[in-house]
Image (cartoon, rainbow, N blue to C red):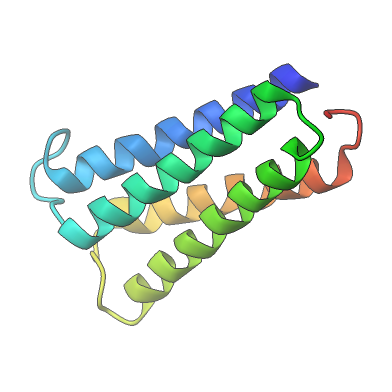
Length: 119
């Protein structure tokens, strides 16, 4: 189960790092957005800390992992809200990416909350 949690956090961290690099203009031209780049880099760092907490397998690891997932979800929902009101990037890539991010985070959070055997 620890391997599954590590895989979850690693995939999420990579997803947000790729999104940040995309908004930095490194991966896809025309999708540059400084605020989105910073927000996604911060969320990637939070998820990386969640990954480290899972790997450490300490008494507080479960709380740290759930907290990391929750903060990532909150930040992503803020991003989705900015897109919805027309403040953030308005591309199909951004819409799809945010839907995927939210689905993965909600699923991961639900799994982490239910799984007592991971820890």
